[in-house]
Image (cartoon, rainbow, N blue to C red):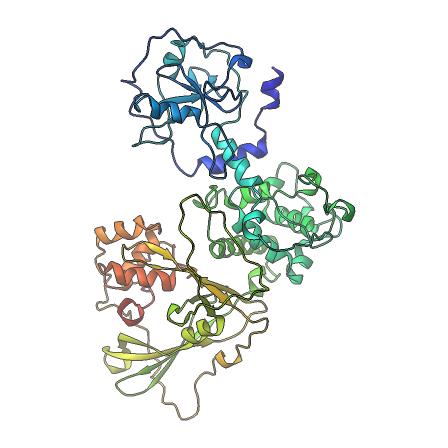
Length: 562
């Protein structure tokens, strides 16, 4: 039918839905076998024009109660949009005895399998469900599922649409006067549903001259990364997809004409860049980035650099890698408390500088009267938000650079005896561009990561020359050059606590990273392991498989794990 063609889900939407639905498996409801059925003679007309909410009269977003045949509107969204709430109100008004509903217009068949948008209002489920005997329940209301075609958007499609099209500027820019701009390098990216982490990283890359020079082209079809790439192979070629996206962002080929900037309504589709193919390709093999959930931008940045490095080296081994623009190394200076001898140790190259936030130095700054107030929409009954303190970026740097103590450091030059070490860390080199990640999470009293609500005050110019490593200095007595030994109490790997491992993984970290953390702190101290994770979760090998016996042990846990 014409309606089924209109509501057909295209490839772009299918990719968005796949990412959204990958977040969690829809469970089978436990109520389907003993669901009450009210024999009231209600039959549902096969003509969609006859369907309407029995409470409000609405004709869209309609849900059929599978127990008594009541048709009600869907739930209201958090922002007031959506349905009339008729179906949920009916469930509550009938003593919460009839929990299962199906969305009319979403029922289709594939062989003997019935597909539909089903929901359970039961308090112990309260979410999307699967109903194995759906065809049987629908037949009792006169609905024969064979041959039915989809004519309504599913809840997942509506969620993706709402997330992609919602005017977030109404929340974050309240009180601000924004000036519309257009032209080369002033191109936005469409939100694909929680894809802001990807969009922000890509926009930063596109603003870097060296990156744009390598990947962007004046004409959308003239990139050298397209040479030799077949139409069939292009969707799986990371360099080609990166070049396509970089060119679209910087060339101005898709920029909106200035005279159309202030027109009402959404922009014409030809001016909206939706990086679907890029997101699908870069995320399809990653357990987190393939979903539609919110993700950490710093983690995505490092993953993208790793993937670009591999693809670039495969194409041209003599060409410098994109990550070299951001690569830097750190140097530790260790002073033995027993004999005051010095030891200098270099770290593996990194691409992101991770800084902890010293909240004890954060202060609430009086608001400037001329500063626009940024507001968030609040639901009825919400308490007034507490003032957010401000932390100077220099305080974060000084906290990172401060001397720390490693209580249980093993010194090979003293017969492997354990003595405290004073440690300071400095930059061996500065990169062309420095990525900085503020560690906004700490372990709360319930052992769950808690986000730190704090504003960062960052100057336009930052001088880090004082934090450049100087290496061994004249007059310093250095520790003899001997082979490293593991910092753990034994040369063999500690036994990892299964309970501790499970507890760390329940917090959302991957198994290999959790094992490394426990190994670094003796095997069972979960709190120390959690602190180790916050210190080392950005290490390049954090989630790599654990080396076999005899290989290098994880990095030492400062201060016994702190």
